[in-house]
Image (cartoon, rainbow, N blue to C red; front, side, top):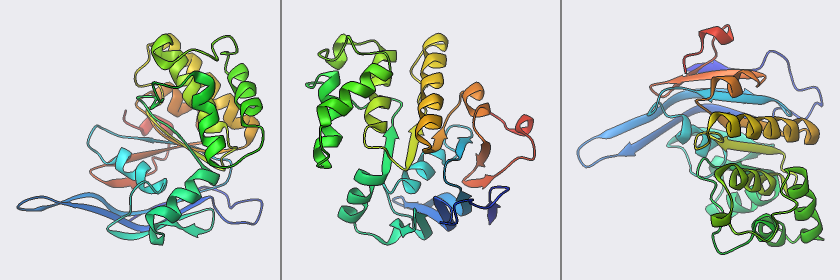
Length: 244
């Protein structure tokens, strides 16, 4: 087992945003069982930004999905904002994510038939929040897309699509934002602009940020960097020891 805990306790007295205990995840194959994660222990404080790095196939995206409640572990527990999400039903996890969690995907995951404005409005409408259009317009202005509200994803560049996805993720003021390779499909210049935007919005809204990334410059901007290797999570003593 590996204990990965922050250097300081949560200052607001409400406990960590994320607490993981003895997390193990296995997948049954036809003739064998594959262990993807093994004995992971982790705490992430409210407002922290944490980068998870590791080689392809090391288990980092699987871990991110378990932390966000997109899947359930084989063993162990995942506690998000005081709720043990690993013990909730699929519907209960979906309701929790709708109100507390944002997610940014490498492949953007925008609905192709909707405009940029409609893509950002959708989670607000599903959550029953007031004035979804005004909130969506405000965020799209904030990410520099005020002139592109009526454009569909196919009319936007990759960087613009990712900015729409970031606006959508922050729309409902999530307590925690998960990002899976948010700059992975972008060129260096566009990726830098998206990184700047992601970190700025994270600071402004005080959101806890947990991301998987191969971008060493983006990882270095986070409060902490965690290394995952063969399903085992650890925290290097210095950022220079992290392998990307």
